[in-house]
Structure formats: C-alpha cells, structure tokens
Image (cartoon, rainbow, N blue to C red; front, side, top):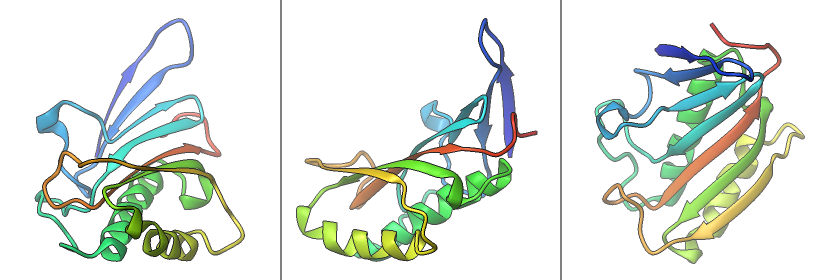
Length: 145
C-alpha cells in the first residue's frame, strides 16, 4: 500500500495504491483517490496482483474479482463495501448484465444498495476483460492513514 498527499486550497487529497490488487503504476493511474471522506476508485478489471486475467470468459467470476479488489482498497483505507455510494459498470456484452447483477446483489446483500449505472462498451482496454467496475465511497473517517 502506498499513499501520497497533495494539498491545495480545498481538503488534502490522498492517492492510494495497493500491492494487493491489480498493478496500475505502469499505466500512470491511482487505484483510488481520496478527498475528504470521499473516495473515487478507478475502474477495476478482473486481474490478479501479477496482472493476469482471472475468470477468463466467466463474467460472474470477473465481477466477483472486481468487487474483491474494490473491497480490499476500501478496507485498507478504513472503510468497507457498505461505504460505497455509487458504482459504474462497463460491460462488453449486454447479455452479461443479468449475471453481473446476480453477483452485485450478493455483494450488496445486507440491505445496502448503492446508486448504479451500467454501460455497454465495444471493448475494454485489458484483453479478455468482460467487465470493469469503478466506485465512489464515503468513508466514516476524514483522511485514511
């Protein structure tokens, strides 16, 4: 886990990267950026810590892996999936919407339902990825350490 603070005229901004989710440093993005209590999590695709696709051809497995990565980041920052207020899902096939929804309902099965958007796209940047999920969360604490 790494973090870097940036300050400006508003609240401090914390950039958060994790060694426990997909590698992103080589493409120049952060796993998550926190401003105040709000965390914006970059789109997660279903890869392991070495950047290898998980769940090839299986949108349910890929959806679970995306949410596992989001959860890992939130826990490292002092939160949980119950802090998610919005998710945006990108799918390459509309037929994958129903299986993705099934997994999403399992993940958010404790009465917490974040706002959600789903978009069908021609392709995702990572070869073999069927789904990408980004999230916005509001943490209970100010800045995660």
